[in-house]
Length: 327
Image 1 (tube, rainbow, N blue to C red):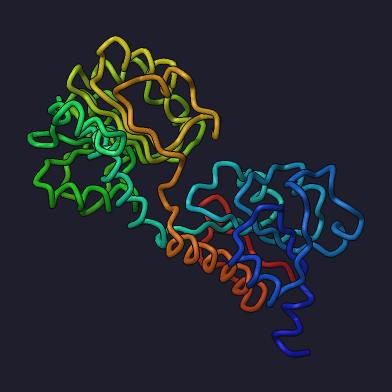
Image 2 (cartoon, rainbow, N blue to C red; image 1 turned 30 degrees about the horizontal axis):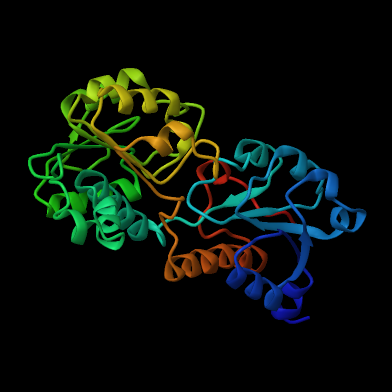
């Protein structure tokens, strides 16, 4: 049997709504088994017998893993994999991969664009032109905030955080950061606590993943430390912010403005944030260009190919780095 024939014999479970480019590659390489959603109650006897891999950008829980006794690999689409129970996967000797690096620059670009939109109020200025207000009422009001003279703190100095920091340096802005621990070789000022970082800066950009340790980490205390001139930008995960505290801080002047690309209950955005005049809101588009999503799709499928040909992953998540291929 040729390598191509061996791969074609491998069944990959793909929940509905997956990336079209990735689906096309899976169809040409493996045997794809479609499922309406990632739900253990939908698993059939055939799936139990044949499925060895999953490709998905929706959550994969322990129940679905347990329902697939021959499952070897979950290829998660995206750098964030908080919706995949990676701990359970490790315990079951199931490899989990994600798609880092290929989206780093795109997300960093979006973070900078969102920061500028938030500070300079550019989306509303464009609306002023498009709805005829410029012709009827004159120039758009001066923006109250500016990027000039700001001090920026990055919460989460991983690949994306570092890419954002490099861009901010090009703007001539000082950068500091908070992580669980300092990053070797970085010249940026490190703060041991998130509150200490917020107290030292007036602009806070959150890039951290959604985990138990980051749940609502940005709360009333952190926002108060950021101060009345403060700007908060979230390009990481919505779960890391207490959205009620954020809405209150925006309403009462605790901080000046916020730019958000992610929310706790997507696509449902709290009305208080929608109504706030000092927010710039995006529908989770950090990596959403055709170029970058295609690269993410390719890496997702490349992980499947590498695992089922060479028995090794390309980009394993830390929790499953020690998982070994069966047989």
